[in-house]
Amino acid sequence: MAITFYTGSGSVPGWKVHLTLEHKQIPYELRMLSFQAGDLKKPEYLAVNPRGRTPAITDGDFALWESGVIVEYLEERWHERPVLPGDARERARLRRIVAEAQEYLGGPQLDMERATFLAPAGQQDPALLARARAAATAELPRYEEQLEAPFLGGESPTLADFTVYPIVAMIRRVTTRFSPEPFEFSPAVAKWMKRIEALPYYERTYPPHWR
Image 1 (cartoon, rainbow, N blue to C red):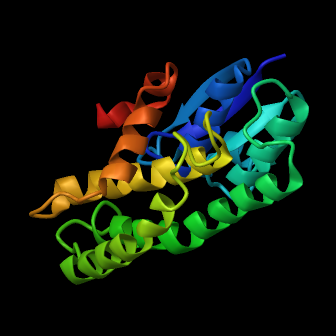
Image 2 (cartoon, rainbow, N blue to C red):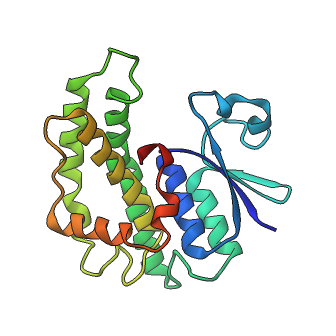
């Protein structure tokens, strides 16, 4: 039975789950929800995720939300093409990268969205955008230290890559749209992003409204 996967176009945590599903080659049915149409607050979706946020999945009669928990569930349920290694210390290292990315890079990324895309019409906040951009710029060098191999976990992508990449992709999109200068990624991070974007399933996960 296929997973039913609920997300919205451009959802950063949803993109992490989408990349995981594709990488692990898990059969799934995509339900793309519209933020603008209020799909997340409709009774049929609240029956899946009562918090009314994306992403969520159903596996038969089992519903699950919160992106990190979803990925861990997929990893335990489908063992092929793992996104976490077997070694306990390496697993812990990658989980640490995930936690730090969500806190210290995801925070500025969300502030950048609040200052631009999520702001009411005509009320964008250039000062908040500048502060968040500076915070993201200060944080990104930490990921360069992890990129001795092609991916953050070694020779193949892992949960760490699928967590960090959507965050930096959103940072790039916000600054491209709303800043006079595009975001400057270091050569190491820029090459890593291109490796993610070269994955054979990447295009299937790309947010439809970004095209």
